[in-house]
Length: 286
Image (tube, rainbow, N blue to C red; front, side, top):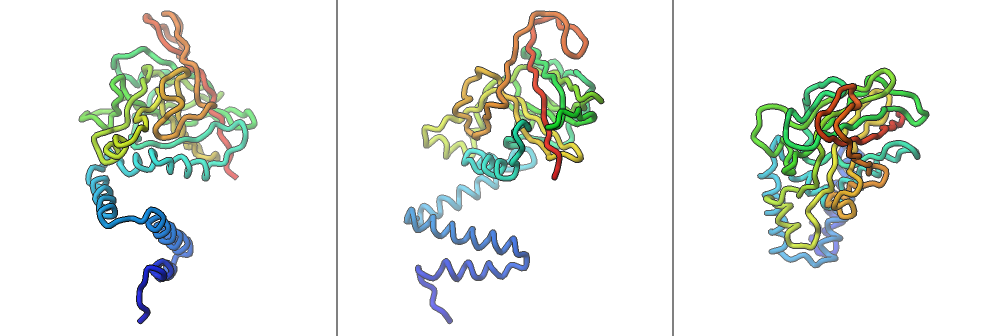
């Protein structure tokens, strides 16, 4: 029996995980073991610190449920989510950049007609987002489903609230010429949830826990690379300090104030409203 020492424990553990029958799992687990052990050696991790980390992970799992993904939030604020997104979506110039999914996306949003209001009368300035869905060659993409969601004017998502029906989320389809029109309300910047383990950790730093005003979009169109992204309001607070590192210059758009009158859906607004124009550019799958 080979004695276990501080010097050989890493090689022994990596060798055991190298027996995984899936070659990719073996590669991942061996690298994980080596990096974890190198981290512990670099910081000279103490037993109380190790236990604190274990308890933090346990609390992160305990607070997570079908509506709250605290582990995704942890990945987001560590920059890991955006790193993985950027490594896996090396898009061609001109394609709409991808960003993080975030912890508040919910499956099964209702399907709404062109320009229908997903805010359902919630307070806020009406916001119309319109443009086209096309590919990098300029070809219109008709029938593209845009899954849209956002926070309310208190900075809360439906997933954080005790509600029985869809709230500030919907699915819209582009017309045959690629045009689309979303109607919602102007978003505000908001704080990430600070009542859990991630918030406890952030509170011990000078890191801003706010996100700039934005609306989420998910487009998963057959034949094209899936796109998860945001549109951010130009001039919004926290664009330079987004706590989840999701801001990209190409996704910052003007929310242009408009007086009462005609709207992009062919209707008329009796109150002042906002207009954001953006063309989503998809990259064909290889």
